[in-house]
Image (cartoon, rainbow, N blue to C red; front, side):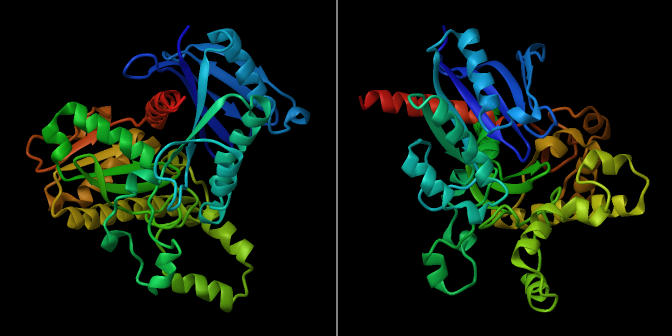
Length: 397
């Protein structure tokens, strides 16, 4: 049976997962699925790589105790793989702070250290750590490996990562970390696979989804990014505000006496596309709407993306390649078109027909900038890290 790893990628109400065979040089996808805790009857669904359903389990709301769905997936995998074939569980962790810059095997002490970073990612960090605790209680002997979204940006230059506040705060770890690093790492590997010349280009990757950010990269390294200390900064997102005048926050706290908990709720859950449109955080819903506020939210989203692409092009000293990825980046031709139109002055030229088909390359022949659409796979990157980490741990025995 395969030497397999289970990869968990936690979202706000569901957990995407995938199982990979890591016996070969490159992980091979065996199956993928969803642990959906949001529905009235939480469910586990498993599909093969082609999308054919292999398994589905429903639980009643009364069974939703935090471990039930993990019991289901581990039990199913015991039959699917043969018990003992699961070598490890890999996790996407949003914030690694200053100390966690490489994949690590999980211990109780490390979970506690990662939990201490929750104030820097209150929407995400608890969701990342909960599966670790659940699986540790169910299978304490099973190796678990954490991979960090912040790690890809760890080498940012001091000028790029620094806030203009007293240095003692930077010494305490208040700096720009950046996120979506596992996605950017995957895109970097795809560009390198295309050619060394493609990897060497001055590239901005637009990871556009419910969470959205940009990364300037060259030679597979992060040079600049739009998110900062927390996943709130930068672009307009589904429910997050993105870049905002800090004076707005002071005004809400001082003049309106808004409680800090309400401000956190406002910034993380009530702003972004949802806040501007008053309708939905889902770009598909907004694009289908005839409401003027929906159109205004879409326009603001595209404006901020193009604005920040231009800023990152300045960091790079030019722009040779623009990559769209993430749910919106991969599937919304209208957003790609709007962003590229705003970047016309940079030499970006879109092939309308290729863009409508969401081809891998969507720029026209006369474009000074390559424009690509590349589906991301954070799970593949985590599987690669798990394979390397397991080899290292086994070598230490």
